[in-house]
Length: 116
Length: 114
View 1 (tube, rainbow over the protein chains, first blue to last red):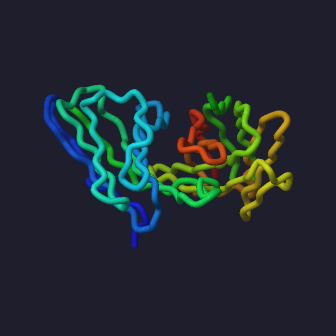
View 2: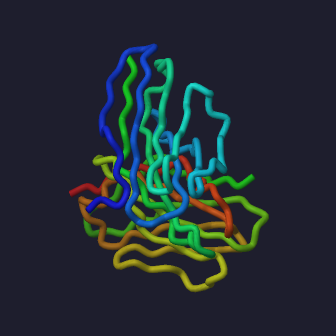
View 3: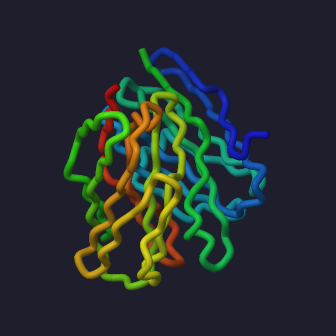
């Protein structure tokens, strides 16, 4: 029973297309995140949602739009895909209790997006 | 701004030997948490070990231990009795108490050789 699950695991698409990545967590966590891992393996936060409310938006192009229908789900929609969007995208979640972040984030298995 | 620096892009170690990966961080906060994550070729991000800044005792998880030096803002990971399955990218990460952003270092590729 996967704690944080992302779909799809792989996504190959052409420039200009619109695509979505879905994420679900069954840990009861209140906060969810999207991270981007570039070709040099550097991990950078993109968005953070707490109980369906956006709390972090890290200078991400507005072609990227996160949506959180409920606190267990955080989806990422990308419009007009560009070559530079090729990367691995990770969903993660964390506890919201006092000291909860001290337990770290639980990550999904990542979605490798390739734009051709 | 909080930053994490991993100065070793790549390291290698012989099977059964010990290796230490370095990490330094920068913050003006006094309460925070530090982590080491492992990313094997499967891409999964796996939490290896965690340390609360207010605890002086170094964390240990089986073959993995840390050397936490708060004054020096240093948080190194020691892997004892290295195994082939330890081959992975290792990321040092940091978050302040009450924070909402886990910040990662650039990672160290560790190769365990037989």
